[in-house]
Image 1 (cartoon, helix red, strand yellow):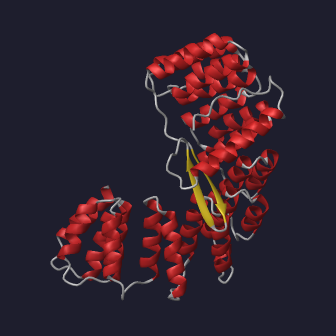
Image 2 (cartoon, helix red, strand yellow):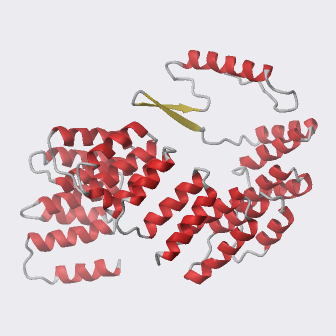
Length: 408
């Protein structure tokens, strides 16, 4: 903001303004997200060029003005350059419409519009967002016709897309093509491996990262702590946590939450509670929720009730605390307590955002929401679900699960 104000002062004292000075000032405002200042200068420009048009379109899209940005995109139909197309693709993604971004890429291909590394970085991010592997492979196919796969940003986006779609081997291959992996590239590799169950490999790659003299950042450590927790390497994980200060990094609440999960997954709930109480930053509901989840893993009823009570006092937004305690009581066969917790939950009118899942079949992504009554094949889906539940019931031991009325 200080630099922008300085630029504004210089601009205001200039005796004359040409297109170059207008463009620089508009870009400065755009980088600060100052939409109205951009609009004011844009409308004052005697002659607009692609730099000012692209900057104006970008700031509209970045501020959630998708319709206005799209309108400007259509108005400059005969003047668009690669930056214009990239801005529109990124705009769709920023405004939660990744499918539209992919459709726009198809139009680019049909019109033989030139690509840039930014084109592929944005498109691969779109594919990763909606988990569409086939379209991701299609984008990768076009990428292979260029030399951009060795670009750090593109290679990282490609690896991230494959990781998000569960294709670990392809993701590692994409990483291998990057000429000089930076911290973002290594972090994507480590986190992708951790999230796909390759916990030891994630820790091994961290060693490689250090040998390449690339220092980790805060996000790198989140992946490392997740990997350590899932692998059950408590001492290793805590050593990694404490090493953050060696790189000038200060642990955030997210890092402390991972450390609590690390301790809790191995049944060290008392140690995890002590760790929380000694945190230098206030512990929020997420941190305590991680400990409650740990109590569920180890069936530590005493600690679970203690932590749950703390979460209950924090307000109705911590719905998961009621669900976790209900699960603990159910696992221990304390059905009266299950009823009490669920009754209290209903009395609070606590609501949660509906869960969402998706599956890609024949290049089409099908999205499903919890309690969705509007899917066009709902009856067929429910019938199949009933058959699956029946099949599971027949082949499961009575103590293995509790099958409740699904209330379609």
